[in-house]
Length: 165
Image (tube, rainbow, N blue to C red):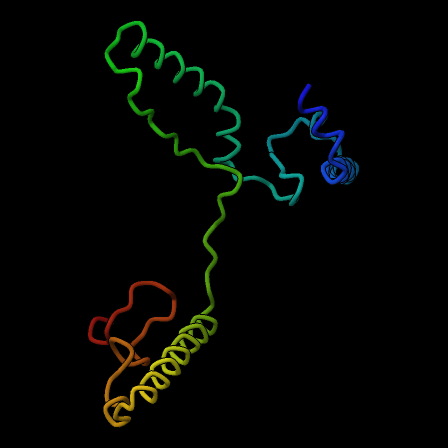
């Protein structure tokens, strides 16, 4: 009852709900009803991406897994009393819809990113040196990287000196 009165009193919520319904209906028109299709693929309606097979397997087996864990919980904690009722539950690390594959950054983009970071660091240090009336010869004497840029690997993996490459 309380939820109905909240929805009636909030036009923004009603507008957002109506927009979601229209988007869902347009997805059904575009892709067809997901309830009529008999296929192995699972498709995210909002992105139209085909979901990874591991996630599809999770969707198919999550209810059975939950029921097994519930029965084990009742047996261990209430029937056999081998564990305390307040003991922590084991986390399920199941693949989900929002798992994104790692994007590979191109070598040029990685170089540009590192150069921008170096430039920002250099600017901050230079300004700090001037504000503190530091010696600029000492300032330029030190490096801001563990090794020269020619020895750096640009694929965001472990940085290695030239000797080990």
